[in-house]
Length: 355
Length: 186
Image (cartoon, rainbow over all chains, first blue to last red; front, top):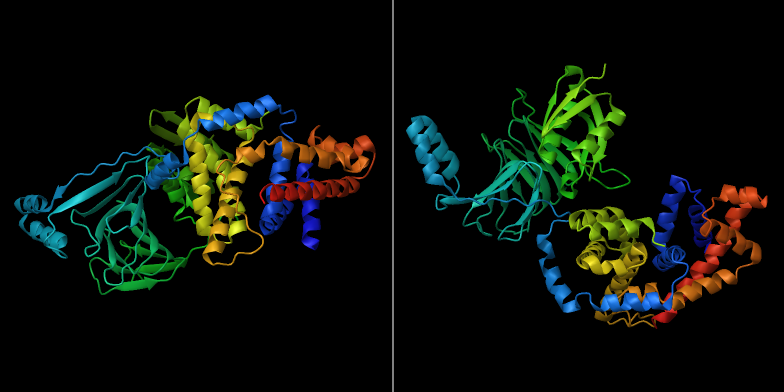
């Protein structure tokens, strides 16, 4: 096999520390064709690191291994692992029932017409439901929930999701402020609907991301697989369907006829990361993002408040990825690509231009 | 002598920084192991499941993990065993029992393969049976940690020759270990 000859050569280059990034990629691709040889290669590298292993050492290790959890126990533990988000985050979930009619009543007392408007808004779809559950992911912590129909939702930091107490396969409507990633369990007869302040997203069995933060002028829906239909809250007849790897941006404040802007999603070729959904893996990806906008994202991810004191700095366009960095590390990384100074005072960060 | 990854992980566990330990485990190995499992299974979903299980199990071992001499090799072995087990199961389900079955791979204890003296002997023998020049170059690179340029200067031969000699060494070693891991599990 010709490709294996090339593989030995590349392994040698790797071991002697003279490999180029292109060669590394090539070796990875070749190893993926021969997993058993890949495995042997890994073992050879490992064994070289433990040159003088004694039998006593081996015995000691074996006795230690005997005290590890039994397989049965591990299995029960694994049953619960679904409740564990890949990176154990600080989970602070608050669930509090909201009494709809109480809210409506308050509205009526305040101003008559506003109360009626609220009443129509809140009871338009299913008048039988009276109480709501609320899930909040506070700033600095995302959270994951599984609903009664099996649908999994990742809620990004600084976001809120409400759904009826009697949520079921027949009644699948949720309300979102902020950002969430949905993996919806498909049902031919009952669609899953997400309400945001400006839009209604109706899924037809699917995985998608919705971004509708308070104070933002856009509502973004990114479809990973399946199909969704996005319609205007104010005018349900205005709607659009999108295909996988498309994103639709709704501009609520723009006085244009073209309300919906559809764009293609291009994952990073190396990591397959998608900008819109990377937050689910605790990554913050930004491409040519204005520093002012990036600061908002960082505020939510790190639960800090960021003030940019100089206008010129707000307009810096930045590209990069944060993963496990602390806020201080993230700021230091940004300093590598952009000139600015910062001060951290408790949770308050101030950013200045460099002289 | 522990490698850096194993040492970092053991230190994190020792300091009871379990969340950081998981983050490290995930960050350092998840992507590579996923590629590795996918190479066996040719499908992303079961590969993802196996890798997540292995990482989680290792993490749950907490302090017991300090018994491991090389974290990377341990993880690779666990993922390989789980992948082969799954393939074997799938094969059985399809009632296509070929001659190449991996029946005895139910062992959930990869360490027993990793640090077996037999494997160590196998690699040492393979190194010893390399042609003298080839062995000398391999050991300068692996044991003394030199780069091909350094060896080239020391032995006064071209970098190209060194790359070729290393390729020969790796071919023999990898095939020897490969035959060993296959033989050990009939």
